[in-house]
Each structure stands twice: as C-alpha cells, then as structure tokens.
Length: 214
Picture (cartoon, rainbow, N blue to C red):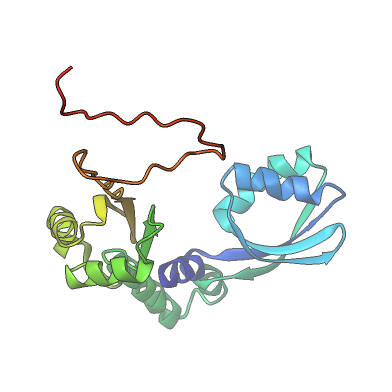
C-alpha cells in the first residue's frame, strides 16, 4: 500500500468525472481491461468521480466512446505536475530523485503476505510460523529462502500436506493444502456396532462362526 501511494504520487494521477447512462458498463469494461481506479464516489445516478493513473486514463478513451460516457479531468495530483509547475526550483527536482530512490529501495522488500487455501488452520497460526522462519512484512526479498521455509513449516505442522511460497513484486503469496484426516482403522477381529444408513426393521439374524471349518 505504501509503495502504491508513493508510485502514484511520483508518476502522477488524475481525479476524473465519468458521466453517462451506461456508467456501470463503463467501469465493468475498465475492470475487464485491468484499468485500476480507486476512491470511487457516485455523484448522482449517471455521474461518478474516481481516481486513475495517467497511463490508465489514456486507455479509457475507447471504452468511453463505446459506452457513450463523457470523461473529463477534475484534478491533477502528483510530484510530476509540481515539477512542471515549479521546474526552475531545485528543491522539487531533488524531491523527485529522493522519491525514485525510495520506490526502488522499498521494492526490494516484502510488504504484503497473502495466504490462500487454509480452511481449518487459522491464518494467524500460519503467519506466526512464517515470521519465525524468516518471512514477514518488511523482510528483504534476497534474504528469504523459500525452500528452507517450506521444509521447516511442513515438518513442524502435520496438518499441512503441501505449502508453496511465491514472491511477486512486494507481495508474498502463500498457498496451503491441508492434510486430510486419517480414517479410523477397525480391527476385524474385535466386536463392533453395525449402524444402518437407513431406518428399517430387523426380521431375521443369521449368526455364523467365521473361524469354523466349512
């Protein structure tokens, strides 16, 4: 989240107003094309105000034309616009390079851990195990030995049959496959109860001795 905010502030973003009778279709098509918006608020039934990156804003032109949606820029935000406004001031150029350096530095760390596949094992328990074995928020990616972490967690927890760790950018995606419970093994030589799957009436019982000679 911190990295995304810095990136948006550095590269710049726009606050736009989208107006049209097919506004829902406009946003559905944007989502299909992986155009990201945030801070979306409905002004009225046909008008929505949202925020979007400069790069994604350019991609909305064709969608706006197809859905007959009128899109206009309300505000421009970000350091890139400030530099253009005050391009003769050294302080803004210096701030620009500081932000670039900050983003490059932060991209070398894991800031988000996503866990999927666990149903019985609490997420907190998995996170605790990951933290103990060297994977936590703020960990340097180059210091994370995923193979070693997988082996340790797998050995320490019998409820996990398989675990996978994938580092994607600043995100760590943890996939869990829980072990199935072993069925209870019944000794055939011991007495046991017989339970019918449906209700009924016993009309006859034939008792035999399985150990007797035929």
